[in-house]
Length: 456
Ligand code: DOR
Ligand code: ZN
Image (spheres, rainbow, N blue to C red):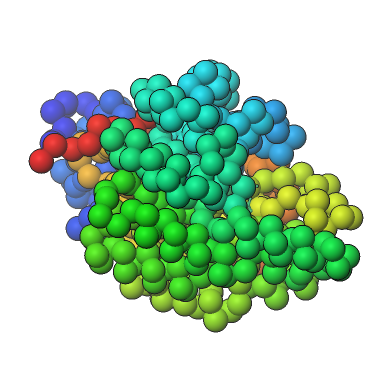
């Protein structure tokens, strides 16, 4: 596809553009919200507006498949506007919002109500997950309305369906397969965790370490094994969230080799942090699954570099600071913000020569778009949406959560020195973030729905 207009809307010039064919120096021609060509500057068509990229790196707009925007009734933690501003500031053009909200997103009516509120508030492209509804028949309505996928929390089900029962889970998987809907899974074994919580609570001992021990590596491994054994011989679309152990990572990789249509993500916190942080920042670092040992963390890096990990997702899970500092450690919610730290952390590894830009773009844009069927996204090429993330690779800075757009102004990464900063973001050819500032209006984001599968 070329530019069949003599005057196009926008030309981005003096850029280093990361395409599927490598890094190209030149410009991007944009018309009607789409990329129409990538060319040396002298071959670009005339444009109504031209913006000089100052030699910065232009990446496909990044996609976070695991974001908790919290709206509707948890607005004190985050809302659609603050959360999607955090996305843009962090270089993400698209987020997929998790359904464990208040109320839960678990019916077509509730999803519709959520979308209605979101449409006036979002500034980034936003898709929505649903929890498993009380009746599996509701899944068809949810799909027709545009649910991007279905999420199940095996350790804390958030559904009336008895997903502890293999037959129920299997039937649900069958319905999802027939609907061609993806199931994303928080894989931790509920019973193992509940037993440990009961044991430690009865002993009336608590410390950040002890609380963390209630989510042992075996809980993840057991849940992953259970799901993988259920789907052998079947073909549902399955995506494992925030895998945190080497064993689970290798089990899923092996299942992929055997031909199962499974994918998985890891988070920046499991890649960059380890459990020793609990001794330094205490309950602030609580997250599920918890931070693991350094050796585990290094193993995940190996799996990221070899290509077996499909996606890096922020698991942006904001809570009020007061909640994170609750004096009763068992009452502290898990999770912390991640949208504004994920890209700089990974770019730092690129700057150090530890991670290739191609791999970064694969796990933050290309693979998410493919797995969640976000047609027209994840790649810089003619015909694709002009969702772009511009990065200054020379910019060094210290992570400072007080400057976050997220309402959660704390981070386990606070004080960390990073290299590489998102400086501009374009959404459908519109400049929406400039030098760290969101410059678009609430409601200017688009609600995404999954595309139909490609034929052939
Ligand atoms: O740490 C977490 N926080 N893990 C989850 O699975 C849920 C999330 C949240 O919603 O806060
Ligand atoms: Zn989550």
